[in-house]
Amino acid sequence: MRTYDELRGQFPWFRNEFGPGFWTVVNHEGILAILQNPQVFSSSVVTALDPDPQYKWIPEMLDGDEHKQWRRQLGPLFSPGAVERLDDAVRQRAIDLIEALADKRSCDFMADFAQQFPTTIFLEMMGLPVDELDQFMEWEHAILHIANDEEGVRRRADASVAVMQRFAAIIAERRIEPRDDIVSKALNYEVDGKPVTDADLLSFCLLMFMAGLDTVSATLGWIFLHLARTPEDRDRIVQQPELIPTAVEEFVRAYAIVIPARKVTEDIEIQGCPFKAGDMVNIPLSAATRDDAAFTDARTIDIERKPNNHIAFGAGPHRCLGSHLARRELKIAMEEWHKRIPIYRLAPGAELFETGGQLGLTTLPLVWGVGASPGAEAGS
Image (spheres, rainbow, N blue to C red):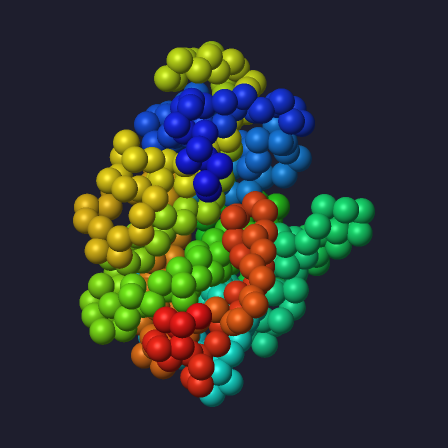
């Protein structure tokens, strides 16, 4: 994130010749212009390093009318009203995880809460048994968080195949015995008047798996790292929990973790950058949300910031489908954690490592109880 901050002061965009070569746009105005011009900047790619992917995540990698048809049918599943109805179940999952940790006085926040919490919600929404949590977390880690060496590539491929096989089995089961879950509802979707294929349903399930788990986990990590290091903000949240919704928006803005890519379909110039048809474009959302031209003191976290019209969830027709659910999960996690563990800090000597792709933490060791009082923190 700091790299984008430094680059923005020199140029609004730059060219990187790594791999196939791509542009990176690093300011709010340019990124917003690209997100709001889907006719020229196609969403048919996931990463700027792969201009011709042999896969299709649905609906993220769709353009035009096909994308609109999928979003129209998926919208009710992720509407504010639908998310509101999930509140009790989401809250209880958070409470169960936190209460299991509270007496231990320490945890690896990423492994023990941030990764488990959204995964349990995902399993329930997809109609999968929660006792498959460990297996799905293992697959998620293999796909998203291991090295790109030969062994890592093999493990990633094996995990991807296993996930697809599990979803294929679920789709087959739901065709015989539908339930009140996302997969069962998606079986009734149509595109251009024809039922969606099993292949498209698999692609949709894979997107839910890839996008729905890691983004919330990574954001939770950054939130609790900030609060562990900034007790004054944490104390305000404990004493004034009504600040939490505003704080969630600020953390999402300050730690926008997604780095979308687009493929240019026709020649165009934006902010003096001469994009050509076929060019790949990197649009790190944190470069937009940390731009002082769009936000006062953009690199400062203000948990009472208003207004806060960030684009951390994207903009235009591909704005994050699950944004309402993500907000709800983050809000509930902050509320329930601070009711039970109001004072905590980084474990002494903790080493923090970032993972690629979603700009997340691999570990976050926290301690509380004895030695984690405000006085202890002040002296640390």
